[in-house]
Every structure is written in structure tokens, then in C-alpha cells.
Image 1 (cartoon, rainbow, N blue to C red):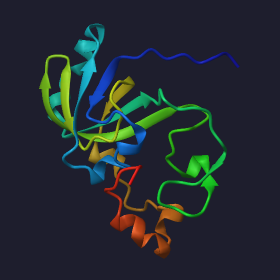
Image 2 (cartoon, helix red, strand yellow):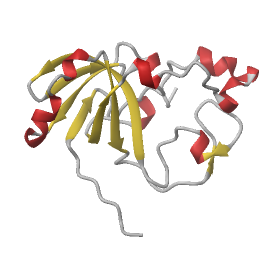
Image 3 (tube, rainbow, N blue to C red):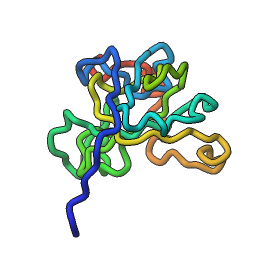
Length: 161
């Protein structure tokens, strides 16, 4: 198979400069602010984006360094397969975050609920559409285990806590 290549369409800016200080999930970091800087040649693609409350950002884990197919997630004692966890060291270091869109200013999207490192290359933006993206019958796999109550209680923590 041919090599797959992507072009960055922008840069994600946040207050987080180290992995250890980045929230483990944006939904638990309501006050974490940031900006998405969309490169000038892609500005037209932002038309009508202001009508959405949340966005799905797809990005490159630029500080990823290799991967293991079995890994231990943050705040968990058990190891799991890489495709059943959200670790940043992956075979294809692609990240996905749902963020809240606060304001659009030209090519800058002001966002909150950010769990992304400053300077992260942006690959794509998609609107979060509750009609399509919510699933009433979704299962949470190993995250449903009762022993993870501690994780749920500490989910707002950072990776380095």
C-alpha cells in the first residue's frame, strides 16, 4: 500500500506545553481555553461553522514517540490493547478531541474544553452533530468496570498529577 500523507490545515494553540500538564479529557476541563489557527488557504472552509456549539478536532500527535500494541492507560492498573484506549503513542499518531466553540474571529476559532498541547498540527475540523454523534446504546467497554470509580472521580486531573 502507498504511504498516506496529510497536510496540516492549521495549528492548535493552548496553555499546555507539556504532556504531563494536559487534561486527560477536555470534557473534564471546562475552563481550559485555546485557539485553532486555520491557515489562510482554508478560511473559506469555515463558512457556517459558528452555528455549531462543539467541534471535532482531528490532529497529529506531534510529540508521539513510538507505540506498543498493549499499554496501560492513565489512572488504570490494567493493560489494554492500544485500540481500546486513547493513548497518544499509536501506530498512526492521530488524535481526536471534542471542543466547545466559543467564538469565530476570521481564521481563529476560540475554543474551550481543550485537552491538546500547544503547537499541535491540525489535520481536520468537523462539526459535532448531536443528531449523528450521540449513541443511546453506546457501551464503554473496560471503562464500565466498577473499580474505575476512582478514575471517574479524578478524571479532571492532569496526566502528571
